Image (cartoon, rainbow, N blue to C red; front, side, top):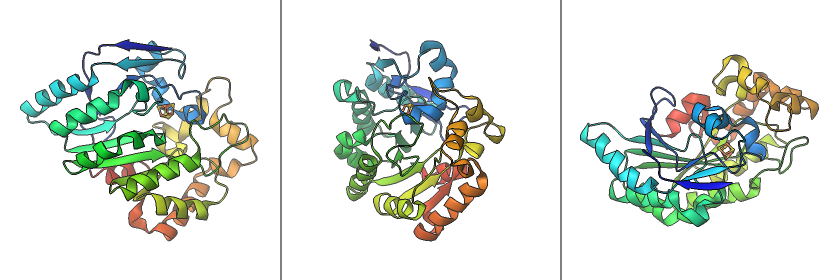
Amino acid sequence: MVTEYEAKSILTPTGGFLTGFSHTLNPYVGCSLGRSLCGMACYASEMRFASCEMPHWGQSLKVKLNAGSLYRRDQARARQKGEPLSIFMSSVTDPYVPQERRYRITRGVLSEMLESPPDILVIQTHTPNVLWDVETLYRLHKQCYLTVQISIETDQETLAGFPRHAYSVSARLAALRELTKAGLKTVGVVSPLLPLAEPELFAACLGEAASAVILDHYLIGDGSPNGMRTRRKKPFHYLPVPELIAEADCDAWNTLGKFYQVVETFQRILGSDRVGVSAEGFQAMAGN
Ligand code: SF4
C-alpha cells in the first residue's frame, strides 16, 4: 500500500549513529523492496519509527511529497547554525524504490541540492534505478563530494532457500559500470556478505564496474555483539539468515575466517586502497 503525506522535516541528525555523517535523509518511510532477498537482513525494519509505522515491512510505503522543499528549509537552518552537511541517503528506505519513477521525490531533493549542495552526499541504493538521475548526479558531483553506493550481497542470481533478488546482480553491476563511466565515484557494497560462487571473478567484475568495493559481514557489521541481531531476526516467512546459509550447505560463510579470506582475495585483485572493510571502510569511501 502506498500513501502520500507531508513530512515535518527531512534532515535527521545522526546523533552518533552512522559515524562520519551529520544527517540522514529518507525520501520515503518504509521500503517496497522489503520482501525480497535484501529485506532478509535489513535492519531498517527494526528502527523504532519504522516498526511502529510499518508493522508489515515491505508491504507499504509512505511518500514524503514535500521532501524537496523540506530539504531547502532544513539545509538553510543547518547552514545558519554553521553545521556541516554530510548526508547519508538513505538509512531506512531506498531512495530508488520502484515508486520513485512515479513520484520523483528523490529527484526533487537532488534538484534542490543543485541549488544548495551538501558537503558530502552518499546515495545508498539496492537498485539500478539510480540511473534515472545520472545527469543530475553528474552535475551535483561537481559541487560536492558525492558517492553512489549500490549493494550486491552475492554474485549468485538465486540463492537456495532465499527469496528472489528485487533486481538482478547483473543489472546492479551494469548500473555501477554506467555510473562510473559517467564520471561518478561509485562503490559496490557487498553487505552483508552472502555465499559467493566465484569470489575471484566477482572481485574482478566489481573492480571493473565500480571505483571501490566495501565488504561487510553480519558478524561484525550488524551493530550487535557476534551478529546476535541477525541470528535472532526472523524475516517474514523465512528462517534467520545464518540458518538459511547453513541449510544451503554453506556454513563456512557464517564465519569470519571465510569473510577475511574473501577480503584477502578482493585486496589481492583490486589493491587494498580500493577495498574497504566494515564500518571503517564505509567511512573512508564516503570521504570522511
Ligand atoms: S532496499 Fe534497502 S531498505 Fe529496502 S528492504 Fe532492501 S536493504 Fe532494506
